[in-house]
Each structure stands twice: as C-alpha cells, then as structure tokens.
Image (tube, one colour):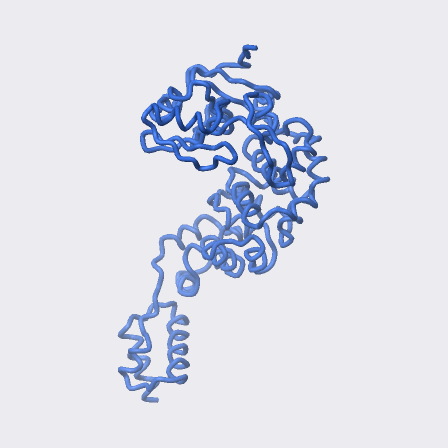
Length: 393
C-alpha cells in the first residue's frame, strides 16, 4: 500500500542540497532522513547531524553504497547501522527495526520493512517523523501537531516507553527545555514520576551527558524546577538544592556554561556532585573552584581585585561573580584586569643566600603575603628589596 505524506517542507531545507547527502540518497532511493533533522527542518532551525533509515538490509545498503563509489563502514551491523561516507562526511544509515525485548536500557531488535513499526520504537512523537529527499514528511504519531503546539509527548504509552529505556526520562526534560511550551504533557509527567526508581540503572556518564545538554539550553531553569518537582533531580543529583539561583544566573545573562549552571544548582563544595556524575578532571576542578570562590563585592577597589585574581583563576572568579549576582561593571573590570603574578621564586631567595629547606618556604609565603597586602603592586625589584630588608633585620 502506498503511503501518503502528512506534509511537505517547501522550499527544501539547505542540508538536503548538500552534495554528500545527495550522493547517499541517490545510492539508497528507499532511504529517508529520520529523527532530529526532520524535527528541526520542519521548524526552520539549523540541522547539524543527518541520520537515515531504510527498509534495505545492512548488507544491501553496503553493496549499494560501494556500487555507487561511496565508502561503507560497518559501524554497527548487529543493530543494522552502516556509516556512508561521501564528500568526507559520514551519514549513519540504519535498517528499519522493531523491538523483540528490552531491559530498561538496551533492546533486542529484528529488522523490518515497516516504517510505522520503526517509528513506534522511538521515544517522542516529534522524533518519530521521517523525511524523503523531495521534502515529504511522514508522521505516524502526531509529531507535526505536537511540534506546532510545543508539546513533548511519548510515542504510545509513556510508561512503556520509559520502561524500555529509563534514559528517556532525562531526554524528555532535554527536549521539553528546547521545544516545549506551556503545560507539559500530563501523561508523560505521571509516567516519569512512576519511573523515577528506574533511573538508578543509568550510568553516571549518561546522566551527566543529558544533564549537560539540559543545562546548556537557552533557559533551563523552568525545566530543572520541573525535574525537582517530579523527583527526578533528587534521584540523579542528591546534591541539588533549589533552583532560584539558577533562574537568577540565567536571567542575568551569564554564559550558557553547563558547569557554571550546575554550580548554581548544587549545594556544598561540589566534590560529591563531581564524583557522582563522573565529571572530567577539568569539569570537576571548575565546579569545585566555582563553589569555593568568593566573588569580590561590587565596590571592591583595584587592589582588592588584584588580590583576588592572584589567588583565583580569572574564569573562576568571573563565574563566582555571576553566581553571587555581582553587577556588569565588576565583571568587566575583572575581565579587563591583567592577572598579577608574584615576581619571586625559590631561586631568588637562594641567590640572596637563603638556604633550601622549610624556612625558605616560610619566608617566600611571608613575602607573598606582603606583596598581596600591597595590592600586588610591588615589582621584582621592590620584592627583592623587601627580601633584603628582612634578611638584614
């Protein structure tokens, strides 16, 4: 039976004119674009990644690509995925599938030629649409209407979709933050509340991957508050407190830095949250530093700012200023001010005759304290003169 498209995108989105994608589609005439590229093309938003699906078996896909002179990489044959490489760009092509069994995170699948069956295994209606090379949109579960309404809705029964993969709980909030408007789907929220215990099955890396995307959104404060209300935030991030500070940071125009925004959500020094989420070394260092740093007051003079910059990396100090609600003038002064560096080191004391050992370290710290007290103004010559004065006294 011939399917009728639900809509057409006209004019065609720019990504469909890309030569590499056109070459792949010419080699695989039964393939369609699926997932996020369809959703964003319909909204007129930029499209970054293009994934394809096809009723053809993986072996047939590889043969057709090679016959067309394109490279075919068997990146995931067990799940029906082949990467087509054209014009130095890769496109994932996956054979249509339906689920045979799931365990709350992974699925056992079988290949099919049934487009609605493949769409039925996807998470949300707005992600279950497919698009042909000539702009025809196929929509089996009302994704177009949900997209227009700003509604994120699970495909079919929400509780069933969540039980198939508990990561979908966090994905719901990520998509709600980016595409949702108004009151969230009640059926989705009810199923999410019931599914909270299943979040314990998720790896820390997957949790942080989704949280990072949520926090990097244009305005995640309302979504994070909804996660807290549903019990999701406490389940994946027990260190979280309220969301008022996050709302203030976002409203003030702070950069959409997920670690900065995470620092606005948690309580305590950040070490426990960093360990729980398995942040990278750089992310963990940034989070702990942001939670520990004290932002200078708006009225701080230049000496006070130099002292602060001498002890705290500038990005951390500026981030702390955002968290503390400091004004734009203070942040601009911090950003423009050179970072002062204490001009003496152990070799300078050794050259002055100070023997190596604990006493040298004590004297070096005392000299640095004197330099800090003076607003970090003393240059190397003045610091050496102070060293000589102390040695002479």
